[in-house]
Amino acid sequence: MRIRKKGVNGKEYYYLEETLRLEKPKAYSIFLGAKKPGKRQLEAFRRKLIDKIYDDLLWKRGRVYLSKEQLIEAEKRRRRYTARVKRLGRAARDEKDETDTVNFVYTTLTTEGVPITKEDASLAYRFTQKNVKSLRDESLRVALDMIKGLRFVKESKTGISMDFFLNLHEIIMAEYGETGPGSIRDVPAFIYLKSLEKVEEIGFRPSPPDMIRKKLEELVVWYNANIGKLNAIEFASLLHLRFYMIHPFKDGNKRISRLLLNKAFLDSGYPMLNISKQSMDYFDALIRSVERKAERPFVEFVYARFIQDI
Image (cartoon, rainbow, N blue to C red; front, side, top):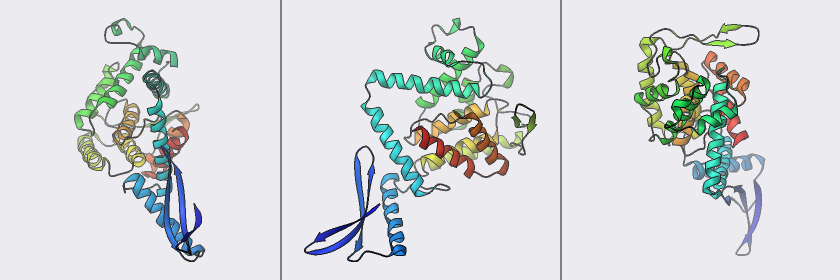
């Protein structure tokens, strides 16, 4: 921000200005008066200008943990990213979609211990319903199911429902019949943290089986009521985190949580994010929020990933 002096009808006045680099540069300003304000007064004017920019860029969307400055920065990057993508030709956009999908599937599955390479994920991306029966490798079939799941998310209507959760889980876990694809668990769940030295249960127990459906229904209501009302970063982070803490399925909860995070981003007009690219940082932030029942650490992690990647 900068203070600019302007002459109007022979008199001098001061304005506080900020120019943002969006799709194209856009300037914002507020009137300071005939005298340059002092430090304390200037800070109050600075806050007013931030409020003005926030309301214009983010349509007064709600926020919980992130500052207006942080969300303005995310929105600036989102708009520049969207403008860059729009300038791409059809072939380049298709290539980008393939790259993004392959990277997301590869990262998501390798963090879950599925032994695939990027080349495997790329091969699965090119399979169609006509030739999928010839796909004998189980890991490739698992990758193909994740690709189907991501496409299901991208092609879905705005909003979620109980059926959306169940159908998505059924798609991505089709190769794991013993875990009940598309079925809510009927046994207690335990979350374990694995390291090179040991495997130990974390200090958090997910919802008991008799509470799962109620918790999911509450999450559905919260989500559908906040589309377009809560900023995209927190909206996506909280959906991921709250779904994961319910842990409604016997297996695949992290996988579907990451797909849901991108469902929220896409419903908010934001690009998808490969949240687990740095797997250790991702798990550290997730488990820290889960164990403490504190949402801020995970929200701040998602924000940092978005700023770094978009």
